[in-house]
Image 1 (spheres, helix red, strand yellow):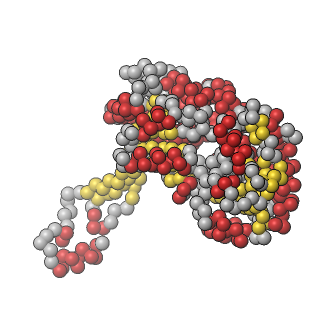
Image 2 (cartoon, helix red, strand yellow; image 1 turned 60 degrees about the vertical axis):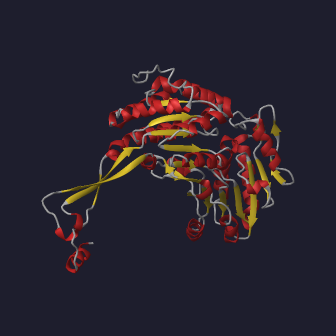
Image 3 (cartoon, helix red, strand yellow; image 1 turned 90 degrees about the vertical axis):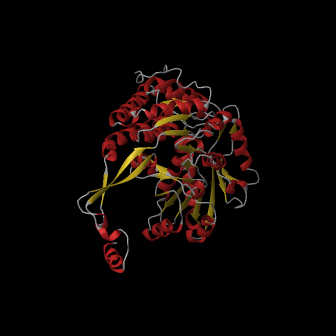
Amino acid sequence: MQAASSSIDAHDASDFLSGHQAHQHLQTTFATGKTRSAAWRLSQLDALSRLLNEQSDALQAALYEDLGKCKTEAWLAEIGFLLSDIKHTRAHLKRWMKPRKVSTPLLAQPGKSYQIAEPLGCILVIGAWNYPLQLTLAPCIAALAAGNCVLLKPSELAPATSALIKKLIPNYLDNSAITVIEGGKEATSDLLTQPWDHIFYTGGEQVGRIVMRAASDHLTPVTLELGGKSPCLVDRSADIDVTARRIVWGKWMNAGQTCIAPDYVIVEESVKEALLKALKRELKAQYGKQPLQNSDYGKIINARHLQRLQGYLAGHTLFRGGQVDEQQCKMAPTIVLDPDPDSPLMREEIFGPILPVLTTCQLSDRLPFITSRPKPLALYLFTNDTRVEQKIIHAISAGSVCINDIMMFMTNPELPFGGVGHSGMGSYHGKAGFDRLSHVKSVMVKKFWLDVKARYGPFSGWKLSLLKRFL
């Protein structure tokens, strides 16, 4: 399927010499107003859906090359996730676009008030390497639904997926309004010098600061999806077998390279041994006796990150794992027992297949430990006690909370996803993404036939008294 017609050849549209040229090209397109209609927005969502379906095999192969993702994981967390997002967005888009009526105060009568969502303009999306397809195209779905032009910058650390995105996008989408630029630090820095209408960045806190500083030069709003150390709390009332099964599934998906993966577990002492045994059983059940040889188990993105992860293990007690295959760039699922709270393992986001397990008498004893640190992107709690559930939900600030499961809140497009504090700012998915990449403009329409003279000068005591009654 070819993209909509354009004054620039489809295969040349993403080969700009500079971010300035790319930005000017998209600005010119946006000024025509073509992206504002519901028909155009729906056509682009349909085209993206066709891309994902028709190129599924090629996308899965690229994800395997970059991260060792098996077909099931690539479909579940990347391709299928995006298709579901498009389906939801498409089903609700026309309703989201409708004017939103609000009440009008007595003083402003006769009149009516409403809000209308208008596109921001040109959006820069900087993708991440750990989910290089999903985290590049999910913000794009929101941007297109909101009627914007989009520049996609996939992560250079996932080169196979990045190259495929650049190749495929012009063949399906309107290349006058959506383009792709590849490259590393220099390309990103060049793009950040442009006056975008919104910048959407997914990645680490360090680069997030750079993006925010660059955006401030143009007073450009940003959405930052960062990360942090997401805690997983296990209460004595939890179903330990199910808890272990879900922790193993969520933690070691993508070899732990997931921003919302549990970063560490805090378990009550009375169920610690039972949990450790259950985790061991589940690791064997899900990844076999030799996980490094399991084709369903992913690899670390590159050698530098593998070395970083190995460094975290120095001086700690390993309950399981720790093995490394440098040739395949893999680290076995690893569990560390009661690490030093001040060690790098417990200070920095792990972003890998290492799970520290800390023991506590009761969960409430560890609340100061969690709340004294930067707010996490996700919080997990396993419990059958509703009192514990409510206490933890209200005691700990986090981007999202999931009770008795891992990461499943991501499957609900009605739940906005985003961070708080150091874990990010702004949220998206579903209507939240549409609103995030729109300007919700306030409109009031007045009539001529009633003109209350009391609001005009010269002022007097009785006029003030009258106005007070209407406000």
